[in-house]
Length: 121
Image (cartoon, rainbow, N blue to C red):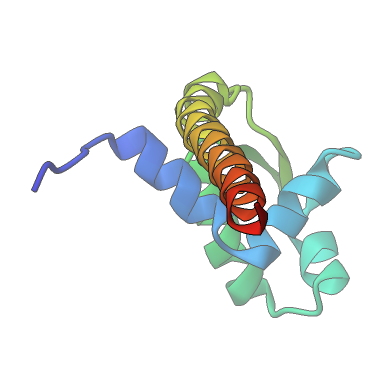
């Protein structure tokens, strides 16, 4: 079995696998927010939201800055080109497979019609 090892892809997809973390990214897409604000928005404890933020930060999707007692979160500077490229390769693969399946189904339908006509005569 071939093992695919890419820590960056693993970290990104792992971070994006959680609904709350995707929600945090969506929220930060509208602007920076403090950990306290995020905790209130998602009805979580500060400890719980911090754990999510750490996962997002490790994946490079979020940056944090602490000023005094307030930790502010923002979207990370890292773009998702590598992840989008990985997804695109698999999208193309599956599209080709579905196209081949469509072609096969059409061929079988044509054969079935032709066979039906032969039996009637």
